[in-house]
Amino acid sequence: MSDTPEQRPGRSARTAQSPAPAPAGPTGEETGKPVQGSPAGAAAPSSSSRSSSTGSADSSRSRASGSASSKPSTSAASTSANNETSQEPSLDEQIAAYQREFRDLDPQVEKVVSALGRLNRRMNVAYGRQVAALDISNAEWEVLKTLVLSGAPYRLGPGDLAKRLGLTPAAMTHRIDRMAAEGLVTRDRDESNRVRVIVELTDEGRAKWLEAMRMATDFEEDLLQDLSGEERGVLGEMLIRLLRRVEQAQPDAGGRLTDLD
Image 1 (cartoon, rainbow, N blue to C red):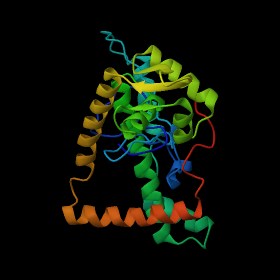
Image 2 (cartoon, rainbow, N blue to C red):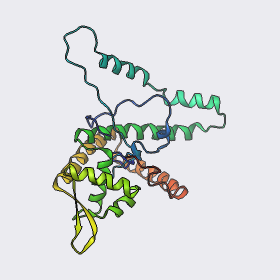
Image 3 (cartoon, one colour):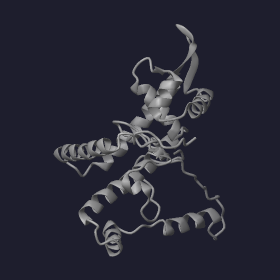
Image 4 (cartoon, rainbow, N blue to C red):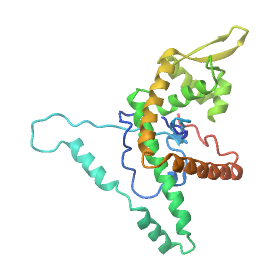
């Protein structure tokens, strides 16, 4: 999955095939800022990483009751209304409106950054649906991912986890408490140093991570199906160049600015 700050991570049941429609109009995520929750939230997770975006992609679901009535249910009507109001202008329409109000706009630059922002937002939604289907949150996905990336035996101290996720110690403790109660991690005293606490990935936690990665891989293959191997390589190199530029200009922008939970 991709690393959006919190995100591979929102949680509501969704398929890995197609992201839900994005909210109308440009948002902060149009420029690649985390969701939920993710941040980067969210990222959420890509096969190379899932972040979560501070901005996390927790989504709510409403189910229409199986009524025999010919009238649409309230939830169904609400969903229809939301679909109608969530439509956003095309990129060309958005850029034309921006140019009308801001004549110094470079349309080529705006097309690139707006497309990246919309793609990031929709990917975060898709990843959030995947983890929700596994009954974990974007925030929990981030912890699982961080422990896996640390390598076997997948153990880290709470302080190390907090630093890697950009969280305060209090927020990290709250998250570990929740995940330990769900059987995703264990928290024990270090046998070599009884003052130190160790957080370790459980078999169940690793199984959740693996399944999320399988779902994300299917989604990502579908996303890139129209690009040849050569085109994928070129696109990847270009995106890395943009990433390096941002990292150089804003070296402190990798973590979260606020705690999301």
